[in-house]
Image 1 (cartoon, rainbow, N blue to C red):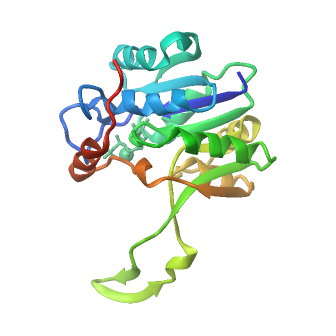
Image 2 (tube, rainbow, N blue to C red):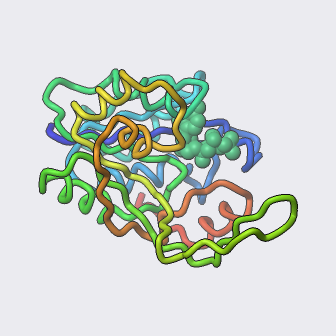
Length: 227
Ligand code: CTP
Ligand code: MG
C-alpha cells in the first residue's frame, strides 16, 4: 500500500504506573493498544507496524490481528527500543517497498478519531513534507523561574502537538538517518532536518493517556468494540 501507520507502543508507562506496559493496560475488556488500532484500521488503508516492548510482541500481534480482521496481511509487529525515537526507527525498518506516506502514532492516544488520520493523509497529498495535528492551548501559560513568574506567554501563538504525525517516507527516513539528537516528537526531528511542518486540526478525544487521571478519563469516554 501507499500509506503506512507505525503505532509506537513500546513504552513502559512509568507515569501511569498500572502494573503493565501502558499499551497493554485495559480501557474496558480491551487494551489501550486494541482501541488505538481500531481507529487506525478505520482510517486510510495502510500497512500497520506495531512497535511493542520486548516480551510483548505476541500480545501486540493478538490485538493487531483482532483489530485488522480480514486485513491481517497488512500487520507486522517489531520490538521497540529504550527511547521513543529508537522505537520509531525500529518501525521504519519494517516498512514495505511500496509505502510512500508514513504516519507515526502513539498507542497512548487510544481514542484519536480515524478522521484525523484521513486529514493528515489528505494534507500530505497536497504536497507538503510533514503534517502535525494540533489543538489550541486552553490554559494561560506562564514562564516561571525560581518560583517566580517571569512572564506570560502569548497563548495565541501556542499549539499542543498530537499524533498521528505524517511524512513523506523519504523525508522521514533521511531525517532519522541524519538525526544527531533526541527529539520529543517526529515533527521536531524532521523540522531539524530543514523541512517545513504543516498543521491540521487534531481532536480533543485524541489526548495522550499519561497519568492515572488520564486513564480514568479514557475509561469514561471509550466506546465499546463490537464483538
Ligand atoms: N514509546 C515507545 N518506546 C519507548 C518510549 C515510548 O514506543 N521507548 C511510545 C509509548 O508506548 C507511547 C508513546 O511512545 O505510545 C508516547 O510515549 P509516552 O506517553 O511517554 O509513553 P511511556 O514512555 O510508556 O510513558 P512514561 O514516559 O510515563 O514511561
Ligand atoms: Mg515516555
